[in-house]
Length: 216
Length: 247
Image (cartoon, rainbow over all chains, first blue to last red; front, side):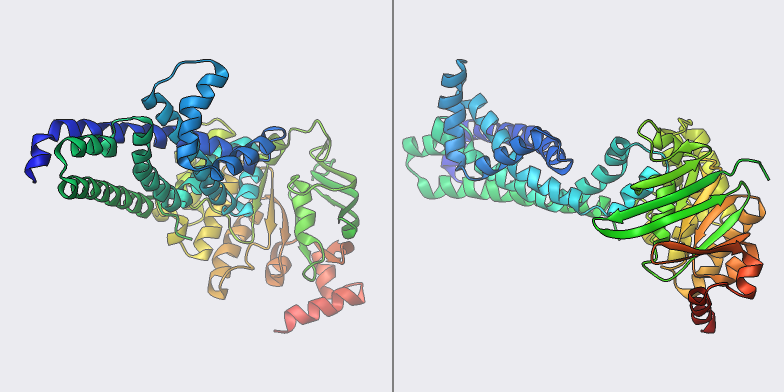
């Protein structure tokens, strides 16, 4: 390990911890919001459906950095609350990734054969029971590969939070570099760290998909 | 035979847009009767039986099951459906659940049986269809004939008073047809009320009380099976019968 990294290890590890925290919040919150949006779209729930469509289209057409600016500057000013860079970034990641996850879950929902719904209904299950017991579990399984690639994207996207002053891995590395000026060692270490963690996430996704796969 | 028929269809009409699929269909099925519905593809057979448990809506006429109007606004469809088992052409087992879980699901969530009770009943039924040892297998690891037998067990798990079969052997390889038909013959011998859409005329001859022949959305013939097989009344049914029995 390069000396400059060793000397600044606690600081960089704190940055990595912040990256992990932001990614975790984004994954959990984004998955929940994404599922809700996907269900609203899939079930074409009146009133909410057009809102979900608008939300997904707007977010997908907005750069991540702009979403973070909105969460850091615009929303607090508009709704009159105080925030900090970390909370604003966490909110931004949830809002951002949910729009993409919603589309992945929705295509999972659409891939479930309608015959299975009929079979469930024929046994006396209500439409809501059919959805949660039969359709959704299959849709989520089918969505694992695209969903995990969103998780991996999100993990890398957390670096953008450095722009609004969050000391996550990239932000911390930039601060270390400003003091030490050893860009090759510092940036290479950071890049390698992202690569290793992203590869591990992909592996987990593949393992989960193989474990839960629906062979048909 | 009980006085009031279990299933009564009275002048039922249904169309998709302007395309009629059922035209003025009337039919009644008494408890214990086995009615085989046959006819060329597109004649409305599947639609007809899917109307009986409310999977397909109909525009006019009336369908009553145990005296209750299926299409009425206030009808508790889940409750009505739980009393009618249904078996589909393409099995439709839940692929993320094992055979025994497939059979358990509605027992737990519709009949509110305990998991232990539901499991015990499921294993009993899987034994009855000859698949006790495959209870923990996923549908993808079962043959078509085995999947269809699990599907029959799943339908029986709710202790239905009638069973609907929608071409239960049409998606099967020839060597698997008999294992499914054997289970159905067993059910018939136990006195189950059955409405079976099928082209298996051997099965019809053996167990059907009546044969209904449909063409272009109409019930063209509805006669006791021995009469139907001796000599169909209509030219259309005669041609159909000669075609499917010829090969």
